[in-house]
Amino acid sequence: MAPFETIELAKCIRHDIYIISGTLYENTHGHRAGSFLRRGTNSTLAAGAVGSLLFINRDAIDNACRPETIAGDDLVWFFGYLQGMRVAYLAKSPHQLSLVLWQPGTRVHAHTHPFGEEILVLKGELCDEKGAYPAGCWLRFLQAQAMPRIPN
Figure 1 (tube, rainbow, N blue to C red):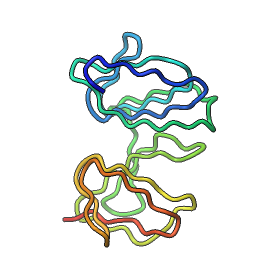
Figure 2 (cartoon, one colour):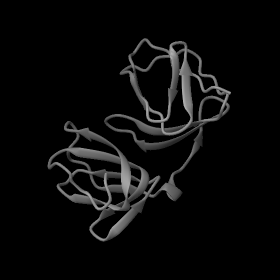
Figure 3 (cartoon, rainbow, N blue to C red):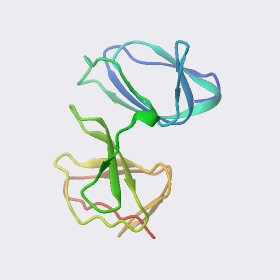
């Protein structure tokens, strides 16, 4: 979002919002980069003076959510199922939304997810047998596809 640009959240749709960079204002309260917001009501959000880069997932199926805010400093990180992997859960229902931090060199064995998996690379690079995906890439893995690895 450009500096001071506003966005209207649609009524009757759940919005999962992760602030990648900048500050996002809701009324007079500013939410900093690294924060996660869940909103299910009609409201207006505004970018700060330097703009905001956001990840927004809209879910029309789950529109009766209660507002939730997790400040970046309040994220709870857990050790993942692999050495070199940490996970912070943002949402668990009806779909799972997580931040995953993989240390360089971490390798993930082939596995599947029942409903597939989508990945937005926030920084660094993700690699698999088909290529390298730098920050800003969006990946969608179907049920039978393996997960990529992090390069050294």
